[in-house]
Structures are given as structure tokens and as C-alpha cells.
Length: 506
Image (cartoon, rainbow, N blue to C red):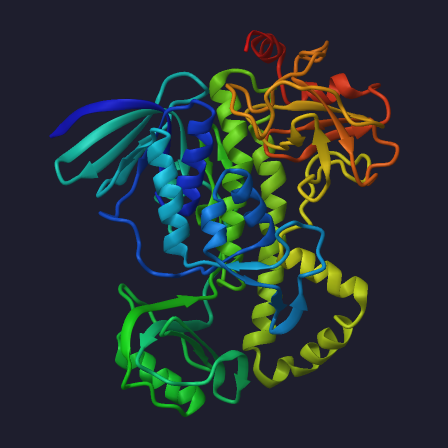
């Protein structure tokens, strides 16, 4: 029997890191959200263990400094096993930030609960009825220990992994490639083996790293077919595969966590179908190399969060929510291409040796090295129409200062920044001063564009010829120029006419 239902503007399916960060973004904008999660409790496995430079920037801006402080900083990354130095990248968080995924998930979960998100655990989505057009609620049928009930939602977001139920029920078309290779990995205590970053051996690939008494081993046995699995491998299988690849015996260790994964890859052709959207592994999935799956998913959540909140709250310009797909689909497509290339280098055996030699030679060229390093750090993404050199990019690396401190580049809604050649005068509450509005409009108020206005000085002189910036809530530059000739059109891509009026009343 179906029990009485509930309702929420947004239902997010999947309470992993991506779903939790999306919930945090929605709640920060005042949007009620219900998370549906089939697992009874949060995961405890390390899984993806690193955050990229861009992800670290985004989390720091959202107050997760303690999580980053606990992370190990690694100034290097790799592309297909070829080392890359990230320390010279133009980011305050250049490098990789080593933190077990369960810690990231725990920090995001605590924030989501603090902000009032409803998390329904041991609850599985079993049905999704979507009416035609934009009228009527989406009906989510869920099953929990008490039986079946229905949740009505205006929007549903699938953050439920590569095997996404939301994607299947909503009928999203995908472009996918079946698995041809399998890798095993395990966290083991009580073993002593040397660390290996990416050791290519005649029998396959081996990786090992020991931290705090736990050794992570990962291996690919060349030539072995993919095993159809319904559960993780046993430790005895991991022991056999490790010996097959390396000749070493780890049978005396104690397994903490065991996992198998493959090189299946795919991407939803669209990230939105009506009022159903996808993010993270539900939208794109691939071999986990370099933490790209987790990081791309968290960046999806940031991009989608403010756009979905703006749509629910009624100030979004027409087409703003569609820009989520337009901006994030190409990013994941590029990641898939890079991951596939790295797979060939790492797992292609002797046939890949000439390619590896050429790539190693090319990365000695500064331009090639910088490009690959920035890509590994997720700093090459650019959104929107071409404009000035900073249009579509973030300002995290620039020193822009208001009268109360560094300019806060993210917030609840778009903001207009006017750069002045001298230090700005007194300002209203800013990033270091508590207040109801973290942007704090200055004496110019909303001006004629319907967005808050801030004055700032470019302390490094890094924006010559730029006098006005339009910042999106996620910190990306929507528009930049030395005049305001086309500014009204740029604002219209973010705010509708009613949205400007609502801003004026805030």
C-alpha cells in the first residue's frame, strides 16, 4: 500500500558528495530540498582521494577551509603516468589536495543538515512520473523500510551514479562504450611493499601507496576479460592478481576495503529533460583516473546549484537552466577524451610505449606542460560567449579589494563590480563583516541594471582596460569591458525582468 506523500521544490536522488553539495547550494539560496539515498549510512571507504585546484577553490569559497586544512597537499599530478608540476598554476590552490572521499562527504553532509536539507536514507527511487510540459508536479515513488510513498517535486536531479535510476526512469539517451578492461583495488593493512606510482610491467599495471598504515593497491592484469560482478572481489582474488602482475605476495595483509572497476564510459546526450536533470556520474562516467569523476561532479553541482535555485526562486532569465547542459556537457566530454587517452597510455602495454615516449618529450615544452597541468587541475574550463580574455573565467587568483577587504566573488546572486584606479571608500558589509547580504550593495545601490554594485581596486593591475565586471553567483565572469555598451544584454542572460525587480526589493 502506498503511504501519504510529501512535497518539495527539488528532490535530489543520491546523497553522495555531488548530491550533498548540490543540496548545500540550494539551501544557501533558500530552496527546500529532499535527498533520497538508498544506503542506510554514509560511506566509509576512501574511494576518490583527491580534490583538484578548481574544486579546492570552490570548497574554500563555501567555507570548507577545515576540510582543506586536513588534506595533504600534492604539487604534482600526471597525464597517463607522465608527471606534471602544478605548483606554477595561476590559482591560490595550485596542486592536488589529498583527502579521503568519506571525509569530503561527511563535511558536505554536515553542512547540508545544518542548512536544513532533508535526507531520507534507506530510501530508493522506484518510479518517476513526469507530466507533459511545465505544469503539475513530478511524482517520485520511493521505497523505504516502511513501504512505498510518493514525493511531489517541481524538479528532480539524479546524482545517483553511473547506473542512475533517474537517468533510466526519465529516459535520457546516452552515448556509451562497454567495458573491455577491469582493475582491482584494495586498502590493506599489515603489508610492506614499495610505493609505485604507475608501474607498467609485462603482466599489467601496478600502483601502491601507503599512508597512515594503510596500503592502497591497484592493479590491471593484462589480457584478462572483464568479470561480471554483483559484489566486490574477494581478498584472495586481489592477492592472486597482485602476484600475477608484480610477483609479490600480499596474502599476509588484512583487507579494509575491496573494489573492482572497469573502463566502461559514457555520457548522457543531454543533462536536462524537462524538469529532470543529471549531475556527476549519472551524467558522465569513465575509468577513475586522477580523481576526475569526483571533481567534475562537484563542479557540476556548483554550476547547477545557483541556476536551479534562481529558476525555483523566480528570477532566472529564460534559458538560464538550459545553460547548465550547454556549459557542463563539453567539459565532461573533454574529460572523457583525456581519460581515454590516459587509459591507452597506462594500460596499452608495449604498444603504447612510442606514444608515451612522444608525450614525455612534448611535456618538456613549457606550453604543453602548462596546458596539461591546467587541464588536470580543471582550470581550463571557460563558459559563455567569447569576450575579453577573462570573460567566462574565474577571478579567484586576482587581488581585487573593496573598502572592507578582498572582494568576495561568489554569493547569492549576480553582482556588478566597478574597478577604480584608487582604493575604494567605505563600503557596507563585505566578505569579512557579518550581514544579511554578503555582497552588500554600496552607495550606487542596484543602479539601472537591477544587480548589486560593488567598487573594487585591482591591486596587481592584472585587468588593464577593464573597468566593469559582471560576476555570476559561482564566481565566473559573465561580462567584462571598459564600457557598459552591451552590459544590459549580459544581465538579461542571467536575470529576467521580474528578477531585476525582485533584486530591488531585497
